[in-house]
Image (tube, rainbow, N blue to C red; front, side, top):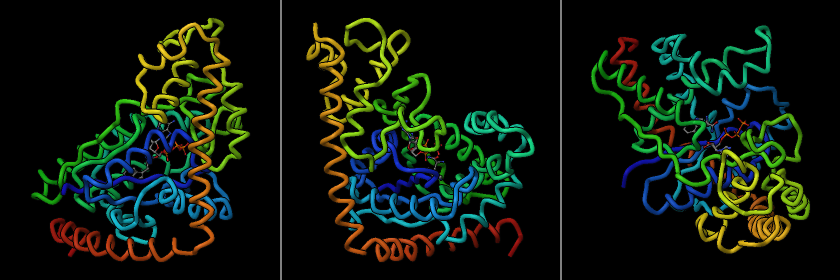
Length: 328
Ligand code: ATP
Ligand code: LTN
C-alpha cells in the first residue's frame, strides 16, 4: 500500500469546506492507502488563537476526524507537537528555502495582506517549511489537500528534490492529490471567497460541523445567489448557485448535470431547501458520533498510540538527514 499523509490545523472550528474538501476524501482513501492523519497544532499559532480555543479546537478535530468516518483501525492519527522531529526538520528546511520562494506563496500573501509588517509573524512566512517537514519526514507518496494547499506541496517537492540533489537521496518526492469536485467550497455570504474556519468576517458565510443543524439550514437558505431563477453551474456568472451545487453534489453524489435536471424550472427556494436538508442530515450524523466519542474518552489513547508509531518513523528520518548534512 502506498503511504499517504495529510493534516488540518486547529485554527478554528472545522467547517463544511474542510469536510467536503478534505476529510470526506480521507475517508475514501483509508482503504486504499497507508494513511497518516494529523492535527497541525504548531501551524495553528501562526494566526492569533487563545490557549483555550486552541485546546478546544484540537480536541474537537481529534474527535471529528473519527466522527466523519475515519477508522482508527486503519488510520494512524497523531498531533503534530507530539512528534518533536517535525520542528527540528523544519529548521533544516528554513536553511534550504529562499525568501523569494516563500514570498510567492498565495496563503502568505493573502494572510499577510490583512496585517501590517509589525504584526506579521515570521512563522506565517516559514509555515511552508514546517509543512514540508510534516510531509517529508514520513516519505509519503500522496498528499490529499484542497486546491489552496497545492502550492505548498509543490514547494515541498522542490525542497525534497533540492535536498536529494545536494546531499544524496533522502526523501520521497510526494504528489499533491486534489479532488476534482468540492476542492474549493466558497463562503455562503461572499462566494468569491473560500469558506474558511479562521474567517473573521463572521459566521454567516460559514457552516461549522458542530453548528446546530437548524442554524446551518438557515445559513443555506440565506446564501447569496444571483437574481435569475435558474439552477445552472456557471462559476463566473453564478458563483453563489454554483457553490451550493458543489455542496449538494458532494453530499449527494450527484453530478452538476443531474442537479440541473432535478431543479429545472424550480425557483432557488426549492433548491436551497434541498441543499439545507442534505446538510442537516450530514451534520446530524457527524454530531451524534462526535458526542459519543467525546463521552467515551477513547480519543487520547488513539492519538497517543498514533504518536508512538509516527515518532519511530520521524526519528529515523531526522537522524538520517542529520548524518547526510554532517550535523551528526
Ligand atoms: P484557515 O482558515 O485557518 O486557513 P481553512 O479552513 O482554510 O483554515 P485548513 O486547515 O487550511 O482550513 O485546511 C484543511 C484542509 O481543508 C485543507 O486540505 C484545505 O485545502 C481544505 N479546505 C479548507 N477550506 C476549504 C474549502 N472552503 N473548500 C474545500 N476545501 C477546503
Ligand atoms: N497547511 C495545511 C495543513 C497542513 C498539512 C500539512 C496538510 C500542515 N501540514 C502536511 C498536508 C500535509 C492546511 O492549512 N490545510
